[in-house]
Amino acid sequence: MNRPKVNSIALVKSGYLLEQLSISRYFWYCCAMSDNAMSGANQQERLIKRGWVTGFVDGEGCFSIGLIRNPRIGRQGCKTGYQVFHEFVVTQGAKSVECLNELHEFFGVGQVLINQCKDNHREHIFRYVVRKRCDLQEVIIPFFQEHSLHSAKQYDFQKFAQCVTMIDAGHHLTLSGLADIVQIVETMNRQKPRQELLSILRDYTPDASDMR
Image (cartoon, rainbow, N blue to C red; front, side, top):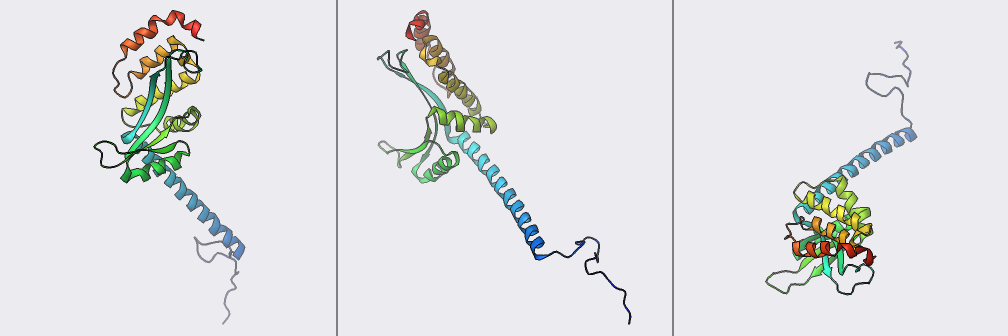
């Protein structure tokens, strides 16, 4: 029986490939699909991780600016009689220290420290801490500027970032600049007003030029 000739590379049914795939083309096609799938999975994993980080910090993190009285006026960083420090901290008990290790691995800066139990706590307290200004400015602050916190802690972060910028510009080295920083700090993390310190700094502001 004579049968109509069919081109072996022709499409037999709509919806299928128009030609036979060679081994090399098939391998390339599968690899491309696999790479796309892996890329999509990695991107989804990163998004989930970022969401976990912001949620975790919302609940357990703290952005703080502190002042330490230092009477040795004249030293670099102590020209006003006060040292100013900044830190980003997340605290957990020993049973959850792995969460802090994950944060450390995620950001790639800072360190996990232990506060050994010396009171009524039943376990040691661990803290993931970032204090270096360059790490705060290049890693921590940009991350939370891009991925906003959802609690009132977002306002503390914004004030924290503002203070770090002011400190980097050297405002803490003058009495008037330090007073401006203190005024911001007293509105963070439910801190008590520091009116006595502010009045001292403001009263001595005219002499600030001598402190440079």
